[in-house]
Image (cartoon, rainbow, N blue to C red):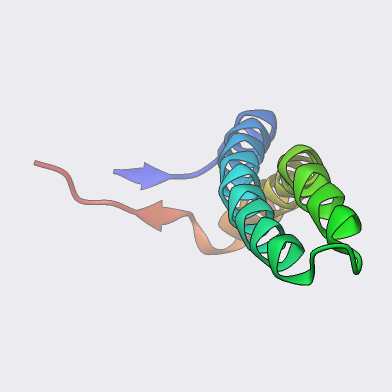
Length: 94
């Protein structure tokens, strides 16, 4: 079995969703650490650290999703170009 071409838009959608999931994961970690540092700092900038953590939960998944979509789009396009020269990826299945 040889994969000769892949649908560029389907790959872009999948990579965008996967990247958004990673963005949510890292956004939650960012939120937890900024909350911890906000608690340590107290009144000396703790509110801004907390806001950065909350913004991370919302912004990171969106940004990761957008850049993952664009990256998947480019990678699938380049794969299709390269498979035209090389012949595709050979896969053995049972």
